[in-house]
Structure formats: C-alpha cells, structure tokens
Amino acid sequence: MSRAARLGAFIVATLLILAVGVFIIGSREYIFGSTYQLKAQFDNVAGLAAGADVQVGGVHSGTVRSIALPHQPGEKVTVFMDLDKATHEIIKQDSLASIETEGLLGNQYLAISFGSAGQGEVRNGDTIASLPPLQMSELLKKTSGILDSSQQAIQNATLATAHLNSVSAKIDSGQGTVGALVNDKVMYNNLEQTTAALHDTMLQAQTGVTDFQENMEALKHNFFLSGYFKKRGYEDSAGLAANKIGGLPQGTPVKTFTYPAKQLFGGRDSAKLKDQKSLNAGGEFLAQNQFGFAVVVASTGMEGDAQKDLVLTEARAMVVREYLVENFGFDDSQLKTLGMGKQAGTNLDADWGSIQILIFPAGTQIPADKPASASSSPKTQADSPVQAAAAPTQRP
Image 1 (cartoon, helix red, strand yellow):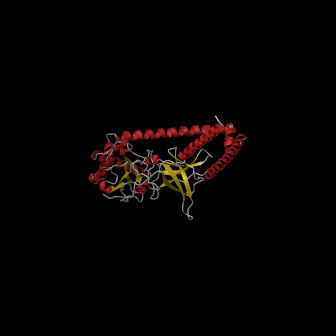
Image 2 (tube, rainbow, N blue to C red):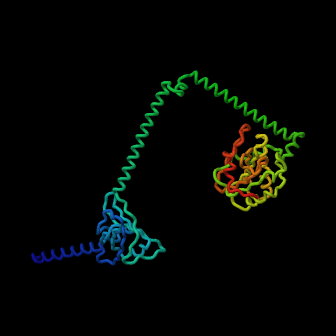
Image 3 (cartoon, rainbow, N blue to C red):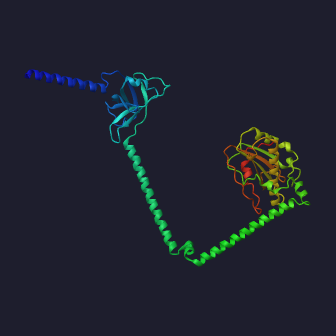
C-alpha cells in the first residue's frame, strides 16, 4: 500500500472514532435524543453544577441544563433540567426533586422520585416540588454537638464514680451511720434483734385484727344479733369488700349522679333502700352507654361514730350496686364501690350524707383495693376525693 493510501485510511479511521465519540457524548447529554424540560427551585443548591446527572429511581435519565440565580433576595435558585421522554410516564405532579451526594464526599446530582398513580403527568416546562439538600457542614456541626454532649456525659460519669469511691472509702473506714453499722457488729446485732421484735409485734397485731373480724362475722350470724344487722340492710361483711376500691382515679367523670341519702334510705343509720326508683336514671345510663368503669361512692355527715359511719357507707354503696346490677343489663365487673365514711362539705345533707354514681371514660385505670384504717380520722373538705371528682354533678 502506498503512503497516500495509508494516510487516507488513517484520516478515515480518525473521523470514525470522532463521530462515535460525538454520538456517545450526545446520547449521554441527550443532544440527539427526544427530551423535555422540568424546573425545580431550591433555597440552596449545595454545590450542584450545570451538567450534573439527573437520576430517576437511581437511573441516569437526564442532565442539569443550567442553574439560574434569583433576581432579588428572598427568591429561590432555579434548576433547569433536560429529561428523557421515557421518564414522562413515571414523573408526576407530586414527584419531588432533591440534591444528593455520591458517597460521603462525591459529586452532587439531582434525584427525582416516582409520582403517584392518580396524579397528573408533568408537561414541558413545569416546576416540580423540591426537598432542601442536606449540607455536609450542617451535618458536621450536629456531629460536633453530639460529641461535646458525650464528652460532658463522660465527665459527669467520672465525677459520679469519684464521689462513689469517696463514699465507699468512708463506709469502709467506719465513718457515718452506715459505716458504723457495717463495721460495728454489736450495733448490727441490736438492729437485727429490734427488727425481729417489730416483725413479731406486727404479726400479733395482724392476728388480732383477723380474730376480731372473725368474731364480728360470727356475731352477725348469731341468732340474737342477726336482726340488728338485717335492720340496717346488710348482714354479710364479706359483701362490703367484694367490689371495693381503694380510692378514686385521676381524671374527671364523664357523668355524675348525686342522691341525698335521706331520699334513698329509711334511717340515719340504715342501709335499707326505700326509694329505689330514684336510682333508675343512673342505671339506664350505665345500660345504654359505653364507659370504662363506674363507682358508687357513699358518705355521711360529720355526726356520729367514725368507724360505724365508715361501715355504714360501705353497706350503702353495696346495696345501691346490688340494685343497679340486678335491674339493669351491663357488665357488673365495671361497677365498683367506695365507702368514704364522714365527709365534710361534700354532702347534700349535713347529717345523713349522700350517694354518688361516678362514671369514668374508657381507658381509666381502676385503683386497687386497700384496707381502711379504723383509727384514721375523717377527711376534711380540702382533701376529699369525692369533692374533686364530683364535677360535673347531675341531681336526679
């Protein structure tokens, strides 16, 4: 082959390589393909440059054509992008544009999310919503703050450990009450003996209370005394505590029914109902409405013996509950009783007292039962839980 032929072949090959390169670059930059244009606006483009990739679903689908600064402060930076026509079916009006980074310190690119199926298609020149970019400087500031907090926490833990070591050293050396107790065997033995004696005393007291309750129960079933208790509307002390709770829960009742004791019962010291129909409004509400739980709360005035009035209010709450359960259809496990004994300032009658049906909403926790102390003094108006829970009040 002649020299001229070789030169001609070289030139042709060079031109072919150049043409292939132009088409490859053009296909990547969508110079020769069918494209459409979208816009997105950002407060800060975080280093995004013209010519950067535009990815849809992680696939290169376009390029950033240009970036325009705002004309005045307060406006946003506008990013113009060219996208392949194939993306027109998955980019919708609710798609979001965000500026992402390749790796930790790589180049920025523009990512567009898929749109929803029910949204309309975007048109050439539309502006889609955007998300603010995560700037590395802000991330480093937050990381620095976290490290500072961690360092302070470590210093506090070190100081706490030093204080604990100091306290342990004082205890080991016998300083203070705890140190003396740990190091002085005589004091420890005396304390152990005192604790054992106190435990025995408490057991004896508990045994005495149990015996007293058993004796009272026997008296109630005695032939000669049973009439005394029946006259007051009850005879089984076990029934008084069957559904008793230790106190009222936190929160306000959704409904409250309040009755004067004189209206419901036949005597000042009686638990026999004489006007049961007055309770029907409360019973119908319990049967027809959803609720968490309800409490029958009974109280008396400030006259009379405190312990007797406490038992009387427990009995009144019990018989009211029995009437409601027997005559109205609802879950009886949701109805509890609470005998308050003497209560100042909350009763409709200063001597006879009152009965309240407090209905609490679903989700209210039922307080656990706790034994009442016979020597406890009556609550005053300021600390009465019935007064706190009685609003709003409805008279029958």
